[in-house]
Length: 97
Ligand SMILES: CC(C)(COP(=O)(O)OP(=O)(O)OC[C@H]1O[C@@H](n2cnc3c(N)ncnc32)[C@H](O)[C@@H]1OP(=O)(O)O)[C@@H](O)C(=O)NCCC(=O)NCCS
View (tube, rainbow, N blue to C red):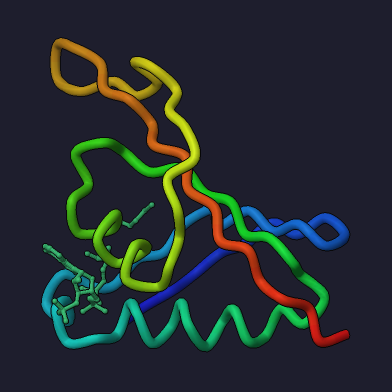
């Protein structure tokens, strides 16, 4: 129904992917999974990710958990005949370790 992947190196984590089965979206599952998974990364102080500019749902979800947009990679992804930017987002976590 829902899955999340991180790549962690020391106190930095990169959110590689988060997906919720299409029929289960807009029920709070993605937000709950992301929030719960952050709590399972006790020594991590910063989470980074990149997301397609056109991915309104994911960008809104990340913003709702206080991820900040920190930059862009211009024309990073293929989009039909053209290209689109990758939006870089970061969340600073306070470590309790
Ligand atoms: C992005 C994704 C994981 C969101 O999962 P979800 O379970 O539907 O999200 P939630 O129901 O937890 O939504 C939490 C908040 O995100 C935002 N959001 C989610 N879907 C949205 C949409 N289609 N349009 C606008 N905002 C949206 C809203 O702020 C929402 O809060 P609200 O429902 O109170 O308005 C899901 O759409 C998905 O799997 N997409 C395909 C894979 C993908 O693009 N993953 C991201 C890769 S970087």
